[in-house]
Amino acid sequence: MHVSILAHRLAAGLLALSVVLPAAEIIRPKVVIVAMFEIGADTGDQPGEFQYWVEREKLDRVLPLPAAYHAIRANADGSVIGIVTGVGNTNAAASIMALGLDPRFDLSKSYWLIAGIAGVDPQVASVGSAVWADFAVEGDLGHEIDAREIPAGWKTGYVPLRKKEPYELPLQPPEELADHCYQLNPALLHWAYELTKDTPLADSEALRAFRARYTDTPAALRPPSVLIGSNLASSTYWHGRLLNQWAEDWVVYYTAGRGRFATTAMEDTGTLRALTNLTRAGRVDVNRVLLLRTASNHDMPPPGVTAAESLAGEKIGHYSAYLPSLEAAHAVGSRVVHALVGGWSVYEATPPSAPVR
Image (tube, rainbow, N blue to C red; front, side, top):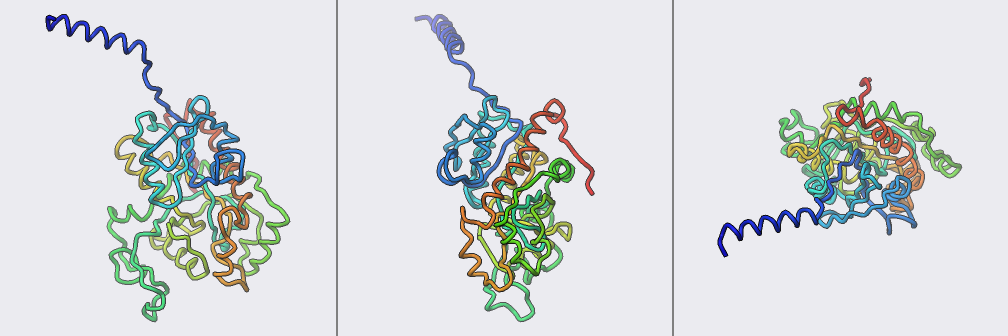
């Protein structure tokens, strides 16, 4: 067959094929909800961080994502999608990167709501509270000497990376510090806080009885509230008064005094590292990220209880304020999700903002 005839027939066949097979759908979500764990199925059983979002926001479409920890869930029009990252910074970074690089999604204008439960410093807030993060600080990168071997004048055996003693100054140069401290967009953060600060949060006799044990920390005695504070992300689940003091000091150190430790979690710097890298690649906008952690338990015991005794009672699904914290994450976070979707004609191009106080 003459080459020109063969080429003509091949081109015609490709044209017919393009007519028969529709182009792959590109999903352009307005909001991506990021949860970290689920217990069992996504619906209909004991809830984890994802279940209320799936059921109440009708994330009924399941989109497989084999390179991540969990499939993507989407609502009917794709305006809201959700992902479960898996527990720990490594799972979080890998799952978010898998989503961010998937060609089925255009995430360049999407807002990200990281919403999960956390331990909370009883000197800052009570269980059941919701905390919008101004900073997320990395708790895994560093040096460590067992506390039984530290010099007499040290408060802790944790030493910043490439330093010789705790909290040594000056801080790492900016290119290294970027791996340790992530600041959330202040104007977007304060918009979310102003929108949600009066959200009613669940309270009960059981929570009031739990709070009453923290007689030496007035903040822990107050009813649940919405506030702003800093998050420490460490894949090691730590507990106790001495490590709480380390967390407070570590956050002050890496934020240069601008942040105050409030919540402890296990994934958020992994998520933010992936989103920062994806921003450099033009795939997402890290300035459109919000981080909400709700207090399922305190990170240290009340007076008269040892750290070991307290830790033994705190397990996923049995935290002191487990269900109230899941309810708080949806009650507070959904107000932001609905506002972003409802105001998309403006927010697609210009993120909402409020004055930073």
